[in-house]
Amino acid sequence: MYFLNPTELGMVAKVAENKWHELISILMLGFVSQGIEDMDSEDAKIWTPAYEYYYFKAANSGTELRVTVDVPPEHEDMMTQSWMKALEHLKALCEG
Image (tube, rainbow, N blue to C red):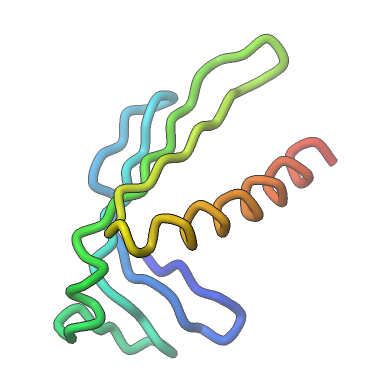
C-alpha cells in the first residue's frame, strides 16, 4: 500500500499483521514518488524496516485507538508530531 501526500510522495508498505478488532501492524518497505517505488537506495534503507502499530480497544463511547511507531531514533520526533496531527484530524472526522 502507499501512504502519500498531495504531491504523491510517501512510503510504500504492507500489512505485517492483522488481528481483527485488536491490532494492525504496517511494515514500511521504502519510498514512493509518483508511482515509482524505491526500496533499495541508501535513503530508503535508513528508514526500513520501520513499523506502525494500530491498537484497537472497546471503550464506553466507541473504540479507543492507540498508535505507536518503531522507526529509527532520528525520525521519532518527526513521526510523533505527524501522528499527533493525523490523530486530531481522524478524531474530528469520526466525531464530526
